[in-house]
Amino acid sequence: MHVFSRLALAVGFLGLSLAAQAAPASPGVPTRPLIIGGEDALPGQYPFMVSLQRLDYGDSDHARHWCGGTLISRSWVLTAAHCVERAQPGGYALLGGATTLDTTVGNRASNIRAIHVHPAFDRSTLVNDVALIQLREPLADVTPAQLLEGSDAGYLRTGRRFDVIGWGNTGLEGDAASPTVLQTVKTPFVPFRTCRQAYPGLQAGAVICAGEEGIDSCQGDSGGPLLVQRRGAWAVLGVVSWGQGCAQAGYPGVYARLGDGYIKDFIAATWTGD
Image (tube, rainbow, N blue to C red; front, side, top):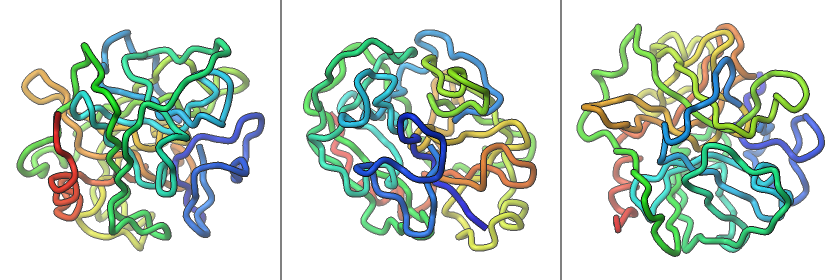
């Protein structure tokens, strides 16, 4: 069985290989750069969402989109480790405050100070698939998302639907497959026991599974948030990580679980706030 991390696809073709200078893929885990079954997000609906831009990847913000990320403070972004495992700060930039990615040709300079990958990230299993990125300067007038404090167990119940967002592949044909407008979809929670039937090697407690046939995240959505609303504010429970295909029956999306102790410890030890 092949699984795919949810990186962006190389410009100009749809396939399992990345461009020569692409961010690293896990050995034996072909990458697949989408929100399936979603709709356009409203301007300002998710102000904390950012596009991780790979600066050698294209000549516009839309073309340079590599992965998603979540502002957890005005200077710090949460994303997936597989998006940035061997990345150098100068080769990437973070674009915040945008719902639509511009297709106009133009340059963008790096605004990243440092990239911190979870030290126990496993490239072969994608366990601990989280990273933190520090900006050189804080983004003004942007409301960050919250990290859920305490246990997430109350949210991991049958019938719960999470918001998942991204600029990834939509499964449609032509230009519509690579949207310029941020996509959003409500994806259903899948119990761990059910998820492990699809993915027998899953590590208990380390992931959240969500999705159903026709509703999922996919390539280009890696690093984006799995969200719930709590007391009128958005809280992040997970990070888009990997899955078998996109929106296939019986194969939900897999998200790094922020409630996992190893991930909590990494964030607490790394994130200095603003």
